[in-house]
Each structure stands twice: as C-alpha cells, then as structure tokens.
Length: 357
Image (cartoon, rainbow, N blue to C red; front, side, top):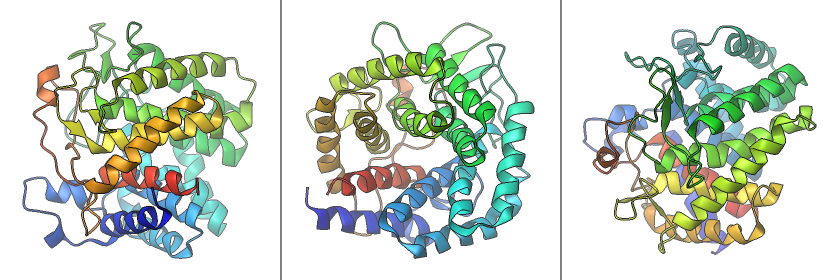
C-alpha cells in the first residue's frame, strides 16, 4: 500500500459519493435509490457518516461544509421518515455540533435520542424493531443492520451529552443484537431474528450483516465506553466480538475479500461488506477487541479494494439493498452496482488505512 494511492482512491470515492451526477450512475432500475444522496435514509446516511470520518481525519473544512450543506438541503425530510432505518444520518450530528456549535444539532440530538429511548418500536425481547422507510413491515424482527443504522447514533449522543442512560441503552442494544444473532457454532452473525417464530428466517450468515457489526460495535464501544466504561455489559460484548472477529478472519478468501454469504465460499465476493469487516478489524485491533494478528486481514482487504475502485471513484462489486431473503441461495442472486453505502464503507476503510501512515 502506498499513501499516495490511498489518498487518491479516498478522494475519488468521496467525490463520486457526494458530487456525481445521474448520468454517471448507470442505467439499471435502482440507480436513483442507489446513488441519489439527497434522501434521508440509511443508504445516504452511511455515506454521510463515512464522509464525516474522512473529513475529520483529513482536517478538510470543505468536507464539513459539504455535510452542512447536505443537512440544510435534506433535513426537512427527516421528520417524515422517523423509523429506525432512517436514523443513520443523525450519527454525524454530534460531530457537526462540535465543529459548528450550532444549537440546531444539539436540540435534534436530544429529540431523536428521546424518541429512540421512549417511542421507537421494540421487539418482545427489548431490541429495537427494524422499521424501514419503505412500505414494508418486519414485525418483531431484529436485524444486524440496526446496530450501525441506529445504535451508533445513540452512543454518540451519549458521549456528546455525557448521558449514562443513553450509553447504557446503546450497550444494551448491542448486546441484545449479538445475543439474538450470533451463531454459537461458528461465531458469525445471522442477518435477522424473528422473535415471533423464534427463528433466523433464511439463516443466512450474510457478509454485510456481519460488516455492520464488525464496524459498528467498536465505534459504539469507543463512544459509549467513554461515558460508562465500567458497565457490566462491556465484558460480554468484548467476548462476543472477539469470537466474531476470529470467525471472520477464518472465512476471508485468498483474494482479501469475503463471499456475500460467509460460509458459502463459492458465492460471489462482495466489496462493501468486505470493506466494512476490514474497517472493523482495524478498529478492533486498536481497541484490543481482537488480536493484533488480525490486522493483516484488514491490510489484505485494502489491497483487494483498490482495483475495485473505478477511475471516476465508483466502487464496484457492491450488492444492492438486501432485506432478509427467503433463502441463503437468494443472496447470491442480488445484483451488484455502485451504492452510497458501498462508497461509504470503502471510504471508512481507506480513511483508517491512511491513518496508519
């Protein structure tokens, strides 16, 4: 890895994510959903979270201005889509408040944190139910995605407000998700759990579901742990994460990427989940959640990622939006095309890799 190559790749990925035009997005049926950043939902939210990490690491004030402009343009949508899967963009509000001091961000952090604690739908097991902006309901379902899309915000809100209640709820949600989704036999996570039927539905150990937690849990522990580092929940979270990290390392292909279903090595390799897993492993090694030997896995993914980035900055090999599907085999049929979350997860990994120079 050369620093100049990583810098160029990160700039291009960021530019395509934030500033590309519809004519550059391709001509498939999902182009607008995949790459239109001017929506308030999880897909642009992941991109905005990554943009903030990139701007913070690079000390680039233009990124702050870009994200502020995005919020001004799109904040009107936020009150019309108050569901768990649309919480992701709020995760940048604590950073924006620190950068700007604007009370709007502080007030919105309090409002959304209160909604999540007091009103957001929960399953009978107490986990946040995975509610979405689309006209679909997933009654009593726990999805791995929620940890990154909603619990990360809660942890960051806890830190900025020095609120132990929020921090402990963030940790509790992480633990509820890990307990529901982690396979005792392999250490990997299933995509979802149905509390009504008592099943993992398709029982897919999906690449990107594992990535949301591989990346999200260390990010959450760093934030919430700063407020309640003596919480009794942290020990179990760390133990479960260690098992997950070891299991992920064992499933990595020789290419440096992971298959779209982790225990199906013949399935196609998927870029966004691979980037998210590697980013999480970097963070986990740094925080002592995983052994130092696993950093090599993340290094290999960075090398594998670079050829997946086109000259215009679009990240290829990214599977489209994926609910819990009806069978494991169906995950191998999901089409691939550039998406905002694909750009975001790649940018997170590149940003972390650059921090090592």
